[in-house]
Image 1 (cartoon, rainbow, N blue to C red):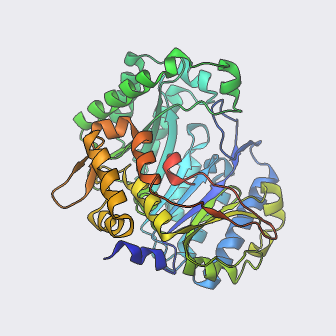
Image 2 (cartoon, rainbow, N blue to C red):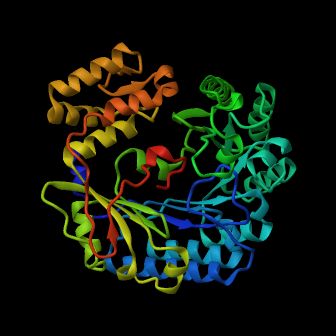
Length: 437
């Protein structure tokens, strides 16, 4: 298949629902989430609004091609068994071809009742934010669960028969090489089939950034980050988990299909405040039939990115699609190709042969120069099938490699303000773990 064909698919292939509620705001978190007491009526109203929006999209036929779904946040498990199961069941009802349905969870709200409800309603996978198996480290991050509670809840999810992913964080306060090895080993002993590992990013405006002030703390030094990621690669590989993306490891057959959708340029839909969609021109045109506030796509655009800017309370009170506000931008084919090259550079399989051929056709000698630079710097290697595969240096110097690829995009990404639409660049899938944009 020619790579450019995916820029004209009418249907989205993945679905993301954002639940912006947490029991507590973590010290490092800059995502759209707000602390909310358990049982607050806003959460039920918000979940009902998401179901109403799903029904609208289903009526348009926009959910017919959905193969994976992900409910993230925030902390979806804070919704409780009834409301969360209702969302899962709604996805199952309106997206008949879903083969993987993931839910993010925190140990403190992943009760036996919630687990049973997830299994009963049709979830297949749960991604648990463990982050560390040392209480001092968890406390410094602002997490409210304990290491013992994390082990217990991960074990319960495995026993429930769900595919379980464990999220771990390195280069964090109080962490040592020994405690990092303990967290990695402890997660593996629980029998999980998927582990995601991330160096902590100290984001401007967070409680952690205010705490550490100016400068770079020694525990988050880039060399420390690289060393811990290398430790993780060795330990997880020894346990039989294969690295399939810069931060993701899985046993054979247990990779996250939803995240692979993001990294291979497949169109996706996002619902909920701060959720992002990436649609083809054709898919965007179909959405406009229910969202007349959206402007017509400009000539030459093949990809539309939309991020919902409607707040959680407003969305709960007025869930109709035509009441939503968006950040909006459009990409031409060359820009979409550059973005797909950047995303492909995150994957162990690299930039696919079809993508490399499309880049050759679109960029000509400029692509040849970029390819040569990436090879000369040992950021990638050329596979026998024509793919460009990231090396260990490419993993560790990811920003350099991604920058080379995105640098192929020429011209400005077109941002289009309109009625209840604002133009700005949303966070890309490459910048977030599961990605939910």
